[in-house]
Length: 336
Length: 234
Image 1 (cartoon, rainbow over the protein chains, first blue to last red):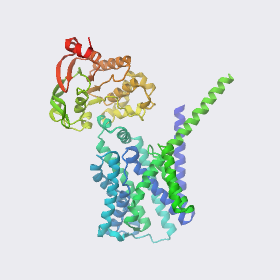
Image 2 (spheres, chains in turn green, purple):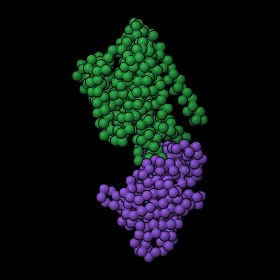
Image 3 (cartoon, chains in turn blue, purple):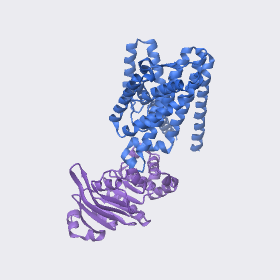
Image 4 (cartoon, each protein chain N blue to C red):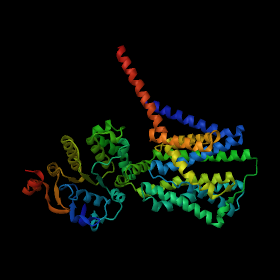
């Protein structure tokens, strides 16, 4: 009985999700102002970044503060591939897939030594990695150096081109979220959780922890790489200041933790809420105040919802249910 | 089955184990007793690969395993139930057990093994959906043993299984280890609980200040005047 209910609940959730994706897919063709398409594109980008960050940061417990590097590497790899192979504007976008692979490969190379470090040491070294990558790109002439790189844009009205990029990012976001969900329920994810809880014990349970960590890091770098590629085509111009901005690194960590790192829902909710709040604040409040409010919001969430907003709401609902159940039992006892 | 050949283990300059040799025979329960700080846990960690050797070798069925990484050693079926249980407290009992069956081999048999674990510890079946951290000490120890069994061990190493448990729970755990042994499971028990450990064991080693000072039949050791005096207080 309960099992049947679970099942139908599961299908209902699935149906709602498909509905949301459908609505989002149709959205840009309803001809909203370009600003709203661009904003929605940003939301999706951050969801993808936060969700993929969560695979190494949330599930595995290795806080990477350099994830923007993978985003930037993806952007640059796409631009360089496009220029070298002389791809047309439509084909450049496809180059974002191999660019994601490049990001993942870099993650393997970087992860091999760095993932031996734990806790704050890993956080610091990934942060340094992002700085080093940015400096390297800035000083390499064939990557445009401090001038940045141009990418051929789609020769069509801005509404149409933005809509196309929005759709592409939507596909990537859905794939990224599905992958995160799959990892959560898989043996791979169970291994990652075991690493987060106690790496030594995980090893004595025959889990090859170094291999698992590197795999998680690579997957978690792949999606930002692709996202960086799409972003580069969307902007048609990339510069180290834009795609290696350290604020992005910090922001995606905050988003994932704000929502809660334990499941794929956390980064999704965190990234969505925070992008909206950020946009709202910077539109309606003076920039200085916006930063202060943003900061305060964080402090409140960290103090009162250390496991993230999603976990907090979940607990609230469970408590509510228990209470109503209890009250019902009591009242029926009194009646009889 | 497992042969430890003259190993020395050091923490920086300090030798925790000096020239320790142990033979574990298949199908038997081997006890390793000794007081606090005598090097018992260090020895287990050395076998598991968590602690590197300074010198000496460890053989598993004739193959050298010292120097392998912990997961490779565990993959051969040398499984440790760590001191203080070391469960994954925020995961449920069921998830803890599933982690035990991580490798493809044990995973294929996971359903069967889990049924067996629940037969051994019926209490765990009742608590399967609960967070492991919310269980009592005795129940946690059962989860720890269950998790180790899920990886289908060939050698089960128990580190202080009686630590912090009520005597009756300790008795139950030891009874189950004996029962598993009856089904052919080789075990190594490391314990300060000398009387109970020796009474279920076949072979025994006495460790003092990182050195083996006595080895022999467990029942003989139980009758030994020196052991009686220093470890049993009689």
